[in-house]
Image (cartoon, rainbow, N blue to C red; front, side):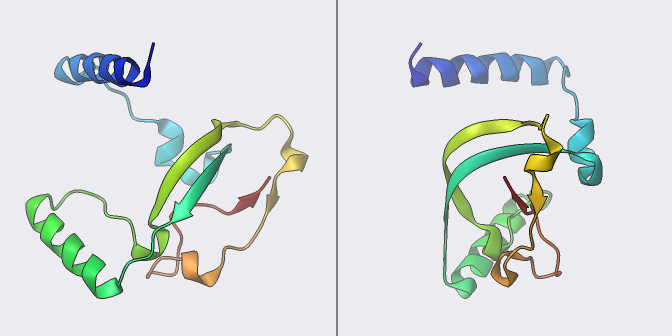
Length: 117
């Protein structure tokens, strides 16, 4: 199956599930402090002029006010997932690290936990 066929099948399957109200919320994602899943991805940070991004978000929020918009400092493009998010069976392998100041949101928090694996 090529990529186009794969994504088409995912789209068809998920549209049918949504139409049938056959959806579930990821309980771990709703409580990030208890979510021990980790993954490894290659990402490229996206840097925009802050004013340009704020104008864009403001316009989009006027169209879809309930949508979540990444803080500018967290913008990125995922290039490749090396390891999909899963629970580690080797807890000694993960070592918490502090995130650089530029990756924190405007509220002082962060949208993702910093773990060095």
